Image (cartoon, rainbow, N blue to C red; front, top):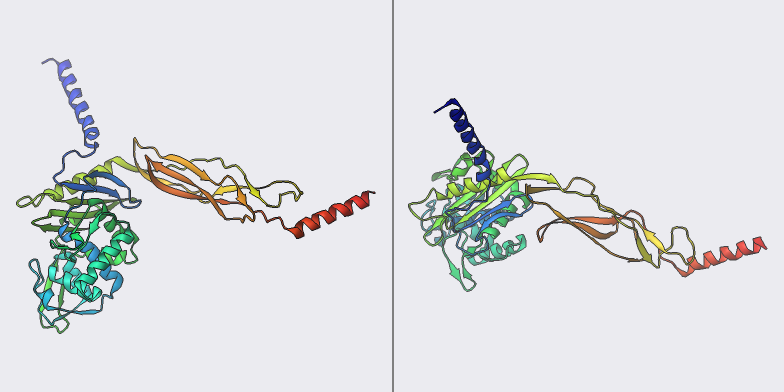
Amino acid sequence: MTMKRVIAAVLAACICLMDIPAEASAPPTELYAQSAVLMDGDSGRVLFEKNGEEQRPMASTTKILTCILVLENAGLAEVACVSAKAAAQPQVRLGVREGEQYQIKDLLLSLMLESHNDAAVILAEHVGKSLEGFAHMMNQKAAEIGCEKYHFVTPNGLDGEDAGGQHSITAGDLAKIMRYCIRLSPKREEFLAVTRTDSHSFTDVEGERSFSCVNHNAFLGMMEGALSGKTGFTGKAGYCYVGALQRGEKTFIVVLLACGWPNNKTYKWKDTRKLMEYGLENYEYRDVRRDVPLEKIPVEGGIPAGGDLGGTAFVQPEIADGEEIRLLLREDEEAAVRLRMKKSLSAPAAPGQTVGAVEYYLGEALIRRVPVTLRDGADKITLSWCGRKLWKKLMLCKLND
């Protein structure tokens, strides 16, 4: 081989290597999970999905909702008593005995670090007064969060069914719940503290029995910025996972349902990494704010600026927020801007009154709405105002005579 051919071969190899990132930046095409979602944790926008709206059992990923409900409805120092039903829960379990008492904080760490099924039942009965009462709270909370296709029966994620259907949810709705837990809940800091704890040791209230828990969420040590997560498995659900990552100003949530069955326990970690890396490599924050010309709005029955009888009153609208509007976008995505404004107003019109909005869309999905308000106002024409104006005109006419 001549020197020229050697150089050409090296250059060709370099070009191939340079092309690799472009290929890696394509949306994931091969995932083990039967349902998967990648969500922007800040806006709640779904960036990628595979059967994201298909309802499936979700195993112990259920416990993220159990955890946040307990945090929002009970104090960490409260004490809960073990019922016979809680003590009879199947593996995985803490091994509590009927009549024992435990602090809520210890039970939450048992729930989220070791995924103990008996801890979930103790907590549910303490907060909801019964498993049925707690299931009602779970379904009510899911509705408040904005979930659409779900049904909660058990607090621990064990396969269950009642008159309302099977214990199940979509990957998209489970991502909404995780976003609520880490971003929107008033107890989000406490949730993160529980789910990020490496290990915990505790006793029952009487101090007669000792326990220790170790966090089994391997994702926490797998990627820089790993924030929180929960694993799950049942024979019906398969391996499931919900996890969150924050790197710089970006936050991503990944949900995987039916991600393999034994002996494929590691599939969920491969899918999680693939989706997180896709988000990190392909999405950046960009300012999509644009200058939108706003015309004055006529005010019917309003006093004109010059105070002339028979004139038309106008008010000047303005965009309420002049700061940057940053959206997490792929390089090939552009936000469309739509202005929705009232064409006219009825007096009185007050400064600060909302008269429309500038809306930012990606496709048909509304991403951000910025209010348009009034810079100035216009008082309503009244009989007394008309009388004063006529009187002034009459006096002016007499003076001119």
